[in-house]
Length: 502
Image (cartoon, rainbow, N blue to C red; front, side):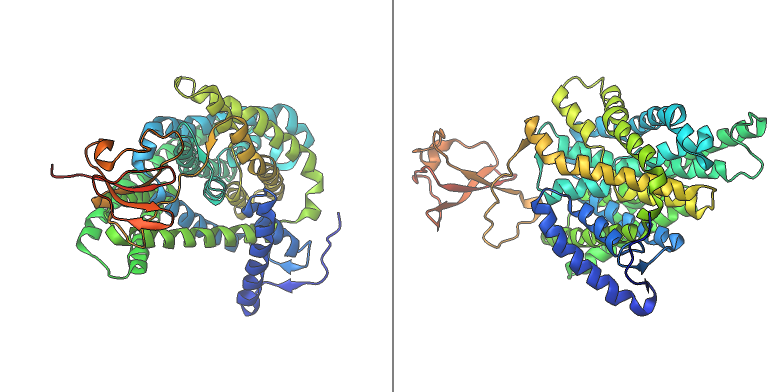
């Protein structure tokens, strides 16, 4: 396949700001049109990157070393923002399921997909895939559910799922990237051993494998330990240091997370895992009060900017003209992963949890989305200089596109078909006031036809302890409630839920 480039422009510092800004403006405008058709925004961004890349308009960017560094920094921001949004209260009921999916589920996916690659796909490929270890490397790279894709679809489409599936999918996708990345680095390091041949059966190979397994567990243990340590230290520090400007508070919190990432890496641990745990602890343990909403919006904006830049960059790296030779094995592998490996690993992992319905397990199986994470992990063998590593990148890129198209575009219809989605609760009318988290939660209850409250006075409602009606909205007017006020169809009761002294 010949490149389609019209002209060539090098992505150098002189052109960087102008070109990136134009690309972002164009990508966001196109993504707005694409999302109306049901396409994930990040898929549109990725395709825009390919369109203006070396095989498209002609923008040259093939520096995998720079791309890997930028990608890891962007993923750190995305994971940290995801951790800050993760509610332990909502996640606690599905904590075991999520952690098992991110560990046992990943290992099962690698095993099942690796066996398929070794038995059926290896004869179609050469180079790095002539060994079983090369097939396992590809399986490890594509084994995890990508956090950027899952968060963007669940939050971007405001998809609300029953049976605690939203928190479950967010926990799994946020915690399995570190596991998959650690396994990828482990397998790349095995390939990098100059005196070891994977099929030689030598004693030295066995010793390298054992050392690699120990490295994997050490990375997880050290990463988790650093995450908990820095998380609680950050909580203590934020209790002593405060900023009047919410943006400074957010930057301070982000700096703590980046420090956890760097410290874990320097100690031989998994930095992404440390950063994610730190974010969860700070997000759940630090009372930010009136700044909580502004800090949340800061991290939401930073996360979207990181996702946009990363997907544009990965699209620029893609060379469709070089993907023809691996298109068929990539499509076969992607379909096997979507239809067989992911469902098998999910059902086996969730077998002990009988309260989770069959329909819920089917949807979890379908949400094995791939995205920037696998493509980023595929850069590791390229940066390491492994023979045939370009084929790995091309295979993973095609598999990711297939996943975003098939799974990403059908997630909302699948949830509706399985009757696992529901409409968003009515937005709470807060009248422009911010309520500190420790004072309670605001809820908006609509009195609808057939509601048992219709016609009752507020005094007769017998609301549970700790719940008070603080405002009533009727026909566009805001009314101060009193005990003898009757409520009728169409009324909005603004309720505060919190502790009282009676």
